[in-house]
Image (cartoon, rainbow, N blue to C red; front, side, top):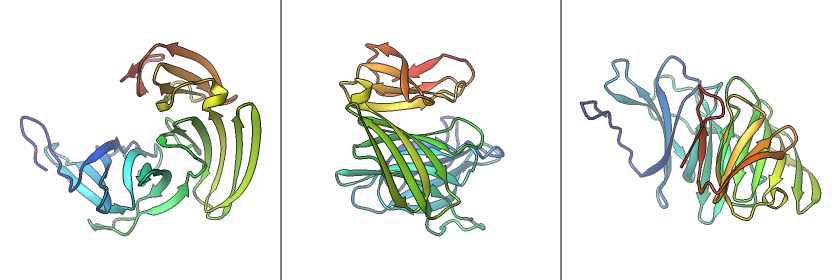
Length: 252
């Protein structure tokens, strides 16, 4: 955890594949990262850059029940983040809250405040509303794009699911442990032949989300849940927006 001319390093007990900046922490340069161990108990690390900029310090270490494949921080609360995780062949997604640390490094368990359990396919990523305090989330799996409305203050409520699948509309009302409502774009209703692989929320237009599949980038209007544009033959796995310039994306 020391700095030098070649950069600053931070060691994890197990391998990891995702790290995210803590956007809501405006006073520090902070990150959260999650491990990817098949057999051992996985961990979430809260990391902060020292005031001198020479060291990465662990501010909190928390256990996580499954392998973490994607992780994203809440833009308005530095203690809230989301994970996409797997257990064997099954995938899940949840929103978590970091407990108050009170100066302790080994902290109590993470509090799970919402489960995004409408997915039947392999979940790829969670996208938070780009900035400010808002209750909307987007989750993307192999075949669908979900728009969620999250109320983390309530512990018993209902989910309202409206899904279009092969031209048919399905409405479900389910009891869950947090208030969440969701609208869905399906792979079939979007006319896609390949699996979705990722996406990004446009920071300049909060009604627009870009999703990627093997051969194109597709742009969606969240007000109508319909495709508005696409870039064909792109051959991409994921995409992100330039936060300072409109209509500029980077793909990989």
